[in-house]
Length: 417
Image (cartoon, rainbow, N blue to C red; front, side, top):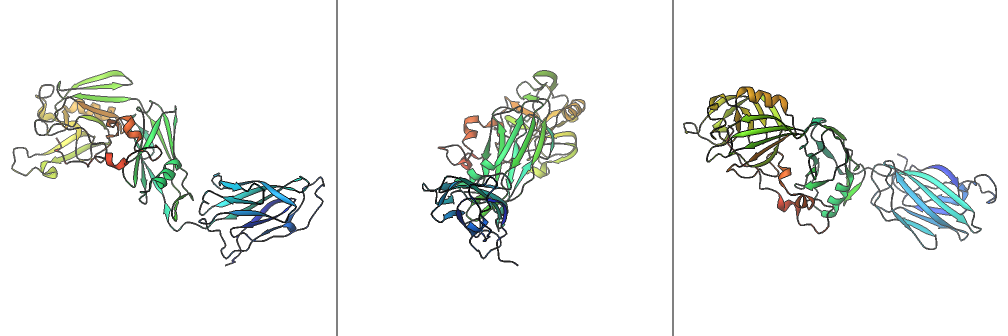
């Protein structure tokens, strides 16, 4: 392999001699008249130091210096292939420029140097170089899958490697971009070292278009850790569907864009199995589910044991809470709470609900004796956290506490029907 760094000169018209270090090769050319009307080819006055690597080490700074006493550097801009500018400082005498930001890994830079000679005539030099790829790359996978979702759907970001340092978290978070049309106020929350959730201050606007991108590729995150490529995400938000179950009144009220479209008699969790209070988000829909008490710790032979085929099951927690058809409890629906934690209704009403909602729609329970829905770990309880506390889970918010301290202990197994 050729051990000369791959440096390609794009334009050379400077009126002083420059030396560029950080592993850039040398080139030479002929001089010219600084007062000529055409571009002055100063290649013979500009040299690049030789290097042992074909590509520059991104851990090292980029340095550019003026050679000789008859001119100075006036400006330097360095931009990588992703359009990110490399920060740097120019000495007061214009003799040297040094990068203060970190080079990106595995990318190509275009550097433009503006200069002037001893008579003040302007000159310029443009060149390119490549940096070595990272040995350890941090990537991110966004969720959910592309599609149409309800107004309560959070955005998730799963990192390929843990990020614990606060400064490194801030680098990652700045690189994760969420756009919405119409615009919303929103924030990321660090659930743990590898997981972030994004939600707006309020629910997404009905009909919104949401884009999620990561500008991590090549970006220095921490000590010898750089970002890798990540796939962008596009979502569409549907109508605002909200289903509110009043466990005390044994009814569910369903609204579309603020208008009531159905009121359904239901049954919720009985004593000892009370349905969780709070806001949940539809996770998915299953036409048929076999629900067994043994799967959540109820022994066979117990008075609470069950093994039932369940239809039109709309899941709202990972631990097994659904809205579903419960033909065996029709006489109690609208009257009493007799389930093991799920919201039960007639087969016809369950079929209607199943066809009406989509993932991301809001399902809220009030006036139950149950605990509050977990914020994380058992589905999407993100909306139960007050906005000011949610904002403190961002690595970009000053004077924050440990964001993971506010994380819920985790999901508890709950009976399914």
